[in-house]
Length: 315
Image (cartoon, rainbow, N blue to C red; front, side, top):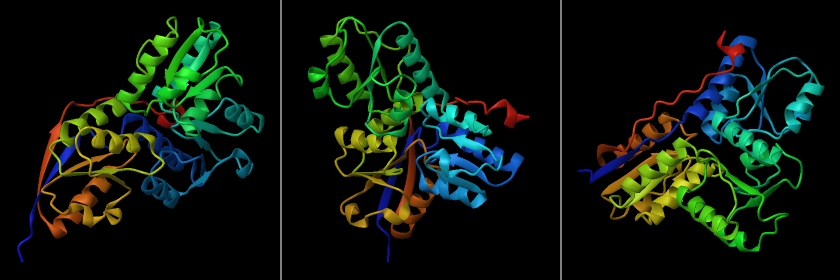
């Protein structure tokens, strides 16, 4: 029987960003140099496939440092960043730790510290409970940072001094939603200061722009990413807002709801910044079983960002 045709419109850029790639490299290089186990505090990146792959190589994932024995093996802090109390606690125990915090997240940490030293109260735009937000707020004393999740919260928030504020943001937010919150902050607090350069990272911005470019051309759209991945969830939201209401977040091909393919001739496909290329290929192959597939890539920009691993691992 002849298979129905299906055009897969691949968004580009998609998948791994430089920060994710660096974090995974740090764990793999540590395993190669020091042997197993290598302990990792929190998921190194938000992707089960990646985490399971590192576990198979000898990585042990923990939530807190007290789960780690004093055996001298390396401890890696995840790409999302950690509160200052974590490396301080590791140092007290004389742990050998490696920081895999994405350099763009570290930039936000430094911004927040700079504003705090200048006497500013910090307003952080982000999602409550996300590891990156916990890490950023944990750079400063309690009360120094106010978290804002929605534009509605701007009108009701209480600040110590309306004329002495600065804002920063989580790196993986919706570009459009964040811009709207910033406008609301600037309208209410006319003297508020912002970052020298936008906090939302290049990869988040590029992936959202690429989804916007394919959304209105797609009958359905799949985003490959973890349910706890902020940047992946934002891609699915952006797809719906940008003209493809039939958009879904999946972890891998086994999660596809084939019922959503009724009447679909063009499928948009992308992946969050912590999803590897192999999962994209897996979805394409699953589609080939049921359809006569044509793959077209729509690339909006090239990415050539590379972050160096710690010197101790590069030697």
